[in-house]
Length: 349
Image (cartoon, rainbow, N blue to C red; front, side, top):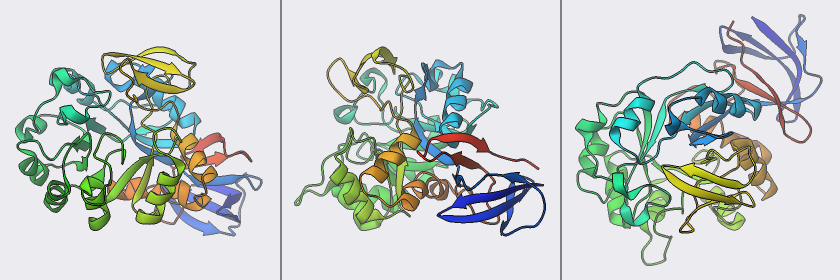
């Protein structure tokens, strides 16, 4: 049992009791505990789409604990290491195990590629792109989310039989195909607006389908991948219950400008913007807390901005995390007055 006194949660000063890794009581609680002195406490952030940070990439197959430590230092308590389009052998090497790490906990993996569109590959390696294969997919372990392009042959069978959350992305599909994919079981868009057809008044594409079906949408709110007006439009359209803030961070996150590697390709980071040699955006160099702060800066209410990076991605994955409420996992982040993370609070007993 642990007790935290005088935490500021959504503007209110409360005490929080935890037991066996769960929140058991919130309010004015008698007893001695750690005095948080009115500092802001938020539910730990959950990044369902991040490739790496501090010089390490998911696909390196080593040192992934350095990413977890960095994420933990920035308010993230859980994450899905996200793969790139490489050989299936290399993907299996990475995803076969979930290492125990300090900082942010690895929940499983997000498979981004190889089942994507060559026309919308972005920074992915075209050499390894292929049609969805559900039998091949079932040989993989620990996959919690998979991004696919539903116009590819075999996609609908794949979606119907996939045990992971299916997200539509890196796609050139039209509205009708996206609707069919959603009806088959797809529940999300991957980095909405990026690497997919734009929302057009006569050809609404996957974004129009997502609006009609009210599925989840991943949004990189770093201010570079999307204009702030588009971020606000997505928030007003989908709301805090369906919009998920992601970082899509790559290995240069937390480091200086320079030349890096991403998915086997050289990447230039200039002014914090990562691009392939051909000029395509190659992930972001902003962590999830930075994306939340940007969303707040753009005019999204603070409580909703944090929710879209904690409770909403947890719901997408079917987990009881990301919310300061009785019965939820006690995975919390303490922030300073500038909303920078001071430490994680993740009691286990």
